Length: 81
Image 1: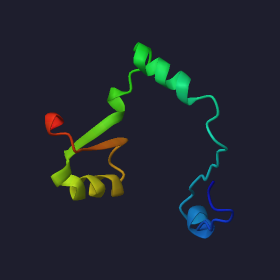
Image 2: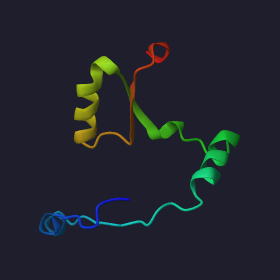
Image 3: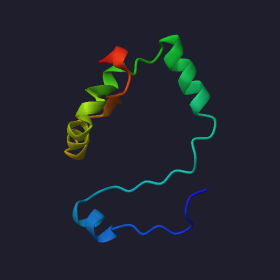
């Protein structure tokens, strides 16, 4: 369970015209999503926009900080490098 009270920078969100949306769990979504991906009905590979080796983690976080990626993978697996 998360914290009961969380402060948000509402003035900055308003100034930057950001939308803040809350969710209450993803009840009953995880298993159907896995089935769609494993069956090939949904291809999520195009969502992985960047892939980095562990040694490049700082660069990966910089890319994420600039908002340049959708899904950024930092791989610790030597076979993927």
